[in-house]
Length: 155
Image 1: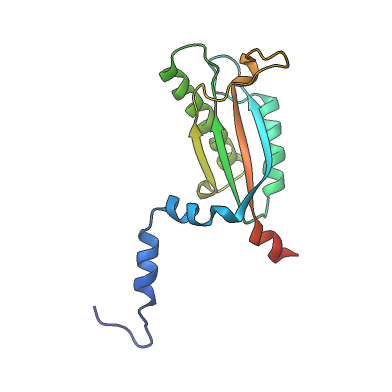
Image 2 (image 1 turned 90 degrees about the vertical axis):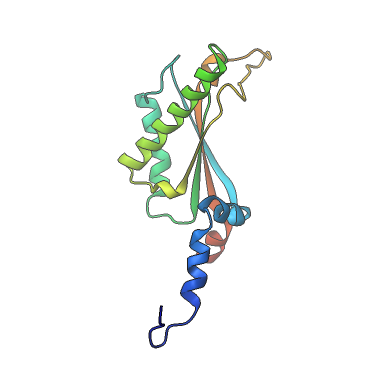
């Protein structure tokens, strides 16, 4: 294909960069991000719908992000160990997806800023006596990661 007047080889370089999977590009720059805040949302047994308290917590987080740039959200879903590991993995994914759906639809947070993972029954929460707390283990943790370079540039 002939080049247009003034066109350089730069578009070819950008085409190559765009062909990288987005995950690789994010991993390359993830060291510029730090954990700024974690919001925890709890769920009822075998449920993945958000209650009023959960929505309020997510509304507070989304309010902080309004008109912000230089952030990523890690949304991790968890389940308690009651039931089969396969079902708990799927339930944890559904819980994480319900949080992502709420944030993207209600608060218009772009999906490219969100990384979602279902953890199943990993990382159960224990009470002060060392016993598993099933109620607190049924949760989604939303980790807000801020870009250090954005913070420096805005000062």
